[in-house]
Amino acid sequence: MNERLKKLRKELDMTQQEFADSIGIKRSTMATYEAGRNIPIDAVVSLICREFNVNEKWLRTGEGEMFIELSRSDEIAQFVGQLMTEEDDSFKKRLVSGLAALDDNGWKVLENFLDSIQIKKD
Image (cartoon, rainbow, N blue to C red):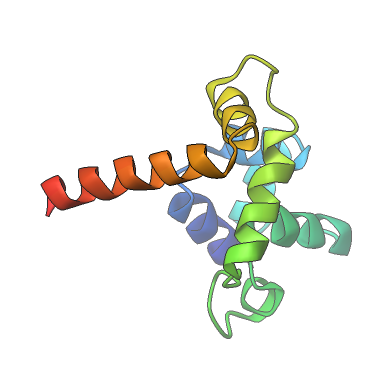
């Protein structure tokens, strides 16, 4: 599992400190996992899988794909959940708040604008 943990962290482009912080453990604990000196307890494995959408079977055995493929609805739900932890004045929260305030006409104007950008880009 130690090599898969390291591979996962690198795939996520995270340092040991960033990875450890995101799951609430110490960097030194993460280092012992990656070095193979300790094996994460089941609760830590579950937390890693939930936090990063990792296939638990892959993490434990190497079988299957690294990540669980989320449906579009699940991706949106996950984004909204993460958004709730953002500061109220963050750009993401302000953007979603602005989108939530759009009426049908506002959505149509936005759609037309985005379509026109895509046409110019193609």
